[in-house]
Image: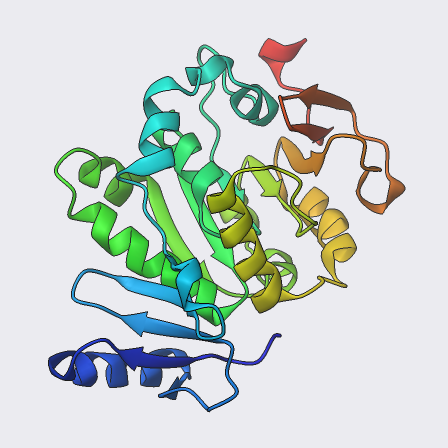
Amino acid sequence: MTELLAIEAEATELRDAARALAAEWGFRLDPAPDQEYVLRLTGERLELCSRKDPRSGSVFVDWAGGAAAHRRLFGGGRGQPLARAVGLKAGATPTVLDATAGFGRDAFVLACLGCRVTLLERHPAVAALLQDGWRRACADAEIGALVRERMRVIHGDARQWLAALPASERPDVVYLDPMYPERRKSSLVKKEMRALQELLGKDPHAGELLPVALAAARQRVVVKRPMGAEALNHQPPTMSIKGKQHRYDVYVTKVLAHDT
C-alpha cells in the first residue's frame, strides 16, 4: 500500500489544521470508505490509525517518553552496538544521515549521544509523522534543546538526495535500516512495524541505496540487519557488530587516523 493517505480531524475545531496538513503533504482530506489506514490529527499529535482494526490503537512518533526515554537513559551510552557501529568513541562524534528514518528511534539515540543527525524519509505519511514528532520533541522541556540542535527531518528519496548532495555536505556516516519482516515479540513494535510495512510495502530499491550511500559517506556506511540475514546486496561488510536482536554491518569508506 504505497498510495498517499487521507487525513482526518478528531474534532471539528481541528479541521482547518487538518486541511492545511493535507495541502502541505498532498494528502486527501477525509478517508475513502475502503481506506485501511488514515492519519488522524488530534489535539495532541498526528497519529496513524487502522480503520479496519480500531482496537489496535494508533502509532505516532514519541521521543520524549516510553521506549525512547528508557533507551536514552538506560541504552548503554557509547558502548551500545549502534554507537560502536557508527564510530562513536572518545574524540569522535560523526555526523549521520539516517537514509531510511522510519519513526526515527535510532536517529534519536545517536542524537542523544552527541551526533548531528539528518532523518531522511521517502514516504510522505511517515515523513509527516516524523515532522510532527520532531515538533513536539522540540517543545519538551527535557529534550527540546537537544532535538532542535542535533536533528532535522527531510522528506525525500534517499537515492536521489544522496546522489545530488554537494561534497561539502557529505555526512561522515550513512545509516541504512531497510524494511524487512520484524521478528521481535513486542506487541507495540509489531503494531508499528506492521503499519510501516503496509505503508511502505516491500522496498525493491533497497539494494540501490548501498552503492549511493558508499559514494556519499565520508567515513562509513552502517546497515542494520536481522540476525542470520544475508548482507545487503550480498556485499560483505568490513566488519559486523552484533546486538541482541540485530547486527550492524559496517562498510568503512575511509580509515581514520585514530582507527589505525
